[in-house]
Image: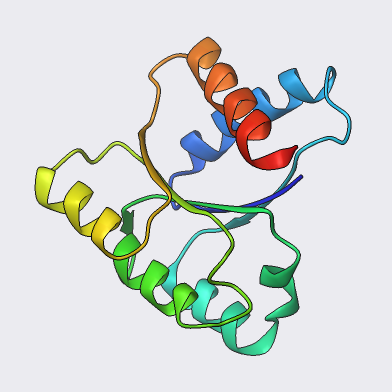
Length: 134
C-alpha cells in the first residue's frame, strides 16, 4: 500500500514512520510512505512529477501546511480526473468545526484527529491499511 502524507511537522512524521515500522512487520504487502512537507514542494511535484501521485493508494494530509491549507491542496488534487478517486483523508490536530465541514464538503474521504500516543498511531495506521489497502 502506497500512502502519500502531506505533513510539515518533523516530529509527527517521525512518529508515523515508527508506527509504520511497527505494523509493517505483520503486513503483506507493506505500507510505503512518501512525504511532502510544504505547499511549494506539493505544487512542484504536482506539476513536474504527477506519476508520483498516480501510484498512491491513499493521501493523508495535515490541515495546516506552510503556504496554504489542506483544503486547497485537496481541491487541486481532486481537479485531476486520474487522481480524484484516490481517497484523501485529513490527518490533523485541527478540530475546528468549519474546517471539518469544509473538508467533507470539498470531497474528503475522512477526517481523523491525530492520536496522542504511539500505540494509538499504530492502531490508526493499521485501520487505514485494513480499510484502504486491502
